[in-house]
Length: 185
Image (cartoon, rainbow, N blue to C red; front, side, top):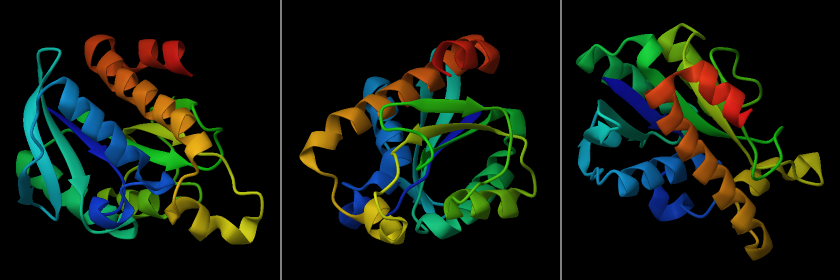
């Protein structure tokens, strides 16, 4: 069974922000594969279903970004998910909008949500898909940049990024991470 996690903040207040690229990708997967995300447990919203013949759990932690690891850790312990079957999708300021990067493992960089995940899981060895959101023009505007409203002219590029991330998840399930990396990186 795969655990596919999108990082973000509760959608009622933060749905239209750059920091919610992970949630947006999960929503696209849920829609395409008709997986309702209606269960509320393990400090998250989740749904179970099938993608390309494989059982999956789609998870959106509801702890706010900086505590995302708590929800993921509880889900992994309860369902006994193997680390090789974990995928985490999140926004990245070091990648241009509309671009994604897939990695087999690695650090958190400057991303507080990923810092929480690494700390909670005590490993860097899990798959991740980083969805580019670009950098603000002024570094001091970072919080406003990731949590503020997205300008209309930028929405299509960000939507392209979450669409690619969705396709990358499907490719990883069907053909493995190496083929997905060759195709999307």
